[in-house]
Length: 348
View 1 (cartoon, one colour):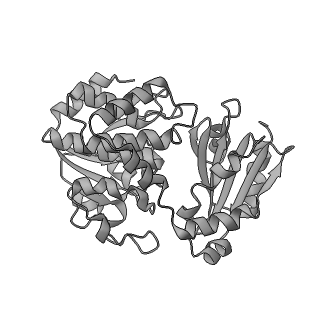
View 2 (cartoon, helix red, strand yellow):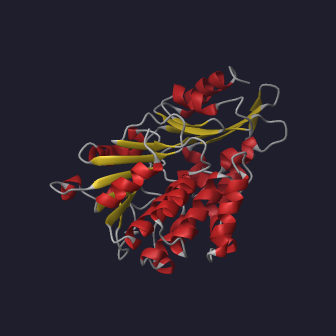
């Protein structure tokens, strides 16, 4: 395993970078990749940030640091990409790029928050096969698929690693990079509610605030602007909440009909698993969401590392952390519910 100094040395001696994260990017992923791009920009490096499609508009404010006029953005995952990054310097979406455009060029890939090569998506994995890859992550099941691997399982978020990287690189964290890193930390600690919220995370956030980061604005953007369709879907889903295992396991199911009734997208169901987990007495919360291509997206959350949901997710081709994991199964939602619950019961 490489050291942080090894990563710094490789970054300093290279000039052209492709920064990418995992499919279905979350707050840690989006915050970390945007922060890193801003840091590389400060260093005078040439870099391009390539993200997978995401429909959570709460994160759009981060791209204002790259010139995106968020008030004019018409981005929606239900309609391709809406040209999200039109006029946004150095940012692209995988759905809009052609692999051939990167041929015969000397790039270095920095993959963030991606536990496996598959998590980079088809195009991301293809690019990773063509260039030198620096793999920076905090998932304990990361196999070290890069040419240089820095995996820190004890880090609360990849954002924490990028904060440390910035210190060694001696680059400025205000205002843009610091805001992006705060998003990463707040997201992966569940707004400082999860067990990974250490004293160090609080000190880092305090330092970022001293540098001008506005936590109120971040929290307002992340949690104070819920979509009407997401709230409506939440009501429909929770009205059919289920429990088993002496009420220690709770789960919600969202099928295509429910999405249609709410006028919602699959991404609008992303936070439902937390509602299932947060019920008094529940040890494991689950959500099952039927996708447009007849697959089932499963999210798993536990209240203790004694029930390692990443092991359950791994059984179905997924992964994650002991207390937060996920997978996508190419089967009917009813079948997936039965199979996943059978695995969960082995641990509860």
